[in-house]
Amino acid sequence: MAHNHPSGSCLPSESDRSLTKKIEMACELVDIRFVDHIIVGKGDYFSFEEEKLEMKEHSFLQISDRK
Image (cartoon, rainbow, N blue to C red; front, side, top):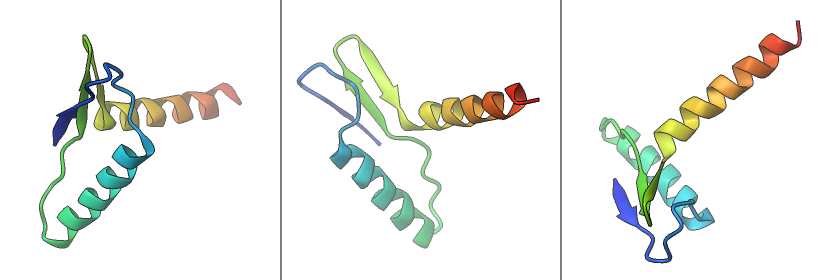
């Protein structure tokens, strides 16, 4: 799924986050793999999937640093 933000900012709004979660849940119900939600802004983009991977990596690095 993809859309643009005419404002130019590619950061997701709370509505974007909420809609993404609802669509992911609906896809699960009918066994459809939801791949990503991309927001296009002025000269940049935001990928929910890339953000998830970065969050997981960041969490892992924080745990690794505790040793």
